[in-house]
Length: 317
Ligand SMILES: Cc1cc2nc3c(=O)[nH]c(=O)nc-3n(C[C@H](O)[C@H](O)[C@H](O)COP(=O)(O)OP(=O)(O)OC[C@H]3O[C@@H](n4cnc5c(N)ncnc54)[C@H](O)[C@@H]3O)c2cc1C
Image (cartoon, rainbow, N blue to C red; front, side, top):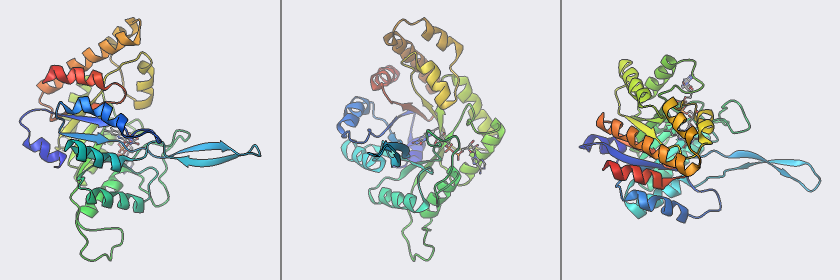
């Protein structure tokens, strides 16, 4: 079932989770250990992220180096399929522009269609770790909106080979990313919102937000979206802080602020176990307030500490 149908049919706020594929070489059991305790809360859907390959340098016997491309976390389509088989819960496959040609994207969409996954979250992806700016692959998309257009085309039976006759129409529900604190490359919030609106006008069914730790940022983002005519559901993405190190890693990686009340409490903690309790309580309060405000879905980024998410969701339902 499509995410948008889950939202339209819901009587209250839904729950969803997001996971990362395991590192290459690890089996799927780690995913089950992670998800088994969480699926008890009956999430409406589970997102699986996509990760581009990274360039690595391998030393050769003669002392020189070879540059090799390594995809550390492959398997998004397979994990989505396995989730649907094991739990009968809808999976949302993330798709990114970075590291993909249009042809490879089309192949992935065809696979998703064959296995019955009708939900995708289309994203641009970031620049590789050792590069400053995002550059599309040859034959790839530069912005998420171009990837979105490819999915919309396939939903209309238009494939890359334009002379394909009577091609099957896919039926993907399409989500896009939104940034309550602005995407870090956007010159200002209004410009970012106009590009977000273009994605929605181009066919996105809903928006999932970047993480935020201050609900006011989300509420004001939703209001700004409505003011510029973005009327689709906006799903808040949230996660707990569980280590002191995250006080600097999260702002640097995700370009979001940590409210002073929260950072002050974390700085008082003697151990990460204490930080985890503070982070859990903060996430619970955030979740309660968002639920009370009637958000369509509480989308939890579950990386690392699923038991913290489980403790929060247990209190909510
Ligand atoms: C919910 C969520 C899930 C994510 N999942 C993943 C994942 O699985 N894998 C992964 O690698 N990354 C993921 N990301 C990170 C995401 O890929 C990065 O934040 C990326 O930098 C931007 O992606 P986007 O889809 O928002 O890009 P876009 O919508 O393309 O926007 C990128 C930037 O370009 C600007 N822009 C947009 N369109 C135009 C245009 N036509 N002309 C000029 N400027 C434009 C925007 O304002 C923005 O600054 C996720 C992010 C979120 C919020």
